[in-house]
Length: 446
Ligand SMILES: Cc1ncc(COP(=O)(O)O)c(C=O)c1O
Figure: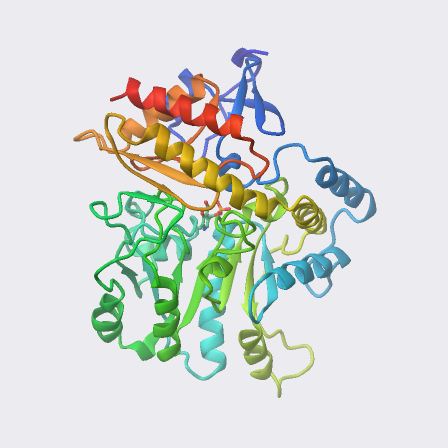
């Protein structure tokens, strides 16, 4: 098949340079295991789990079969005022995997919806406890929480925000970014140790500025994924938890990327030993095969919301929120099969082991190449950072991405970084291939 076999006039591609795409299309028509097949018959190695989603590898029969079976059993049922058996089973499995008292799952269909859901829960929870004035949110520079107005507002990626002006939520502030490019340029499976306490800014500036009593929640990704795999300083998340507790502020972890095994354990929360009040997930929960997202809330949040309605009539809804596709039975069947497969094949442990292989290969194969200014690896993910081309931010990484694609490897350009985050089934030979292809492309675009 060639690109002439389909008409490209009508699909407006997301987060893609549409004009240049049409000159050099990258169109997948099939996938299996670690590889795609393109429209022009080339094999491409999936070095990024199709954007952190396909963690168990492509075309996994147990997941496919569960979806087919579910379609023939219960294709869809409304989620409002009724539910389906798969939603209860999936939420039980997720709650059992989540740490601490994170036991109540609100489903949605994407990470963006999860972000907005968690922010709305925070406001509704504080209101239910008589603190409706708590309506300030704190995100972090370079954080990514999707493209809804809430997630975009607490997010800190300038290009995603710049067109939306006053449409962004008004009462939002941002923690400073967590990277020190001088002292922590090269990090492999260790936590960056900072001399400085970078959360003093929260305690000494941001909280007093808004008054801590007005702050509803802090939302962070345990590891900043979309920005380019930037790791938190040692002790950062524990200290963030303590500060939030001290001031009655909810802590939300956006684990859309770090959740379900990427760090070699269930969640980033487990890796760092910190339990948030809400944990957002999406992507890998269904191996990316069917859209699903969600927020796991603490018992405390749920119980507070229920208690606030104690005197209300039986038909009173406690939380006016939900999506038509919340807990879609086919998505839930996909999640159940995916989570079962993770367990049966011990894929999280494998992600941890292969993470060391990936990090070793990236540090030994890419450090010292022209323009490379940093490499960060942790769990089964790593980023190599290149010097920016003056006046053309992001161009070098984009060119490297294109060259890698033409050489048969899908990588992720993120700012000045190239990110590798392969499926957990990755083998050493795939890692070596990815790193060699990236190394050649870096040399070519130096
Ligand atoms: C941490 C995080 N939150 C939210 C999202 C948004 O997810 P979605 O694209 O499914 O809306 C992403 C997507 O990459 C993400 O990495």
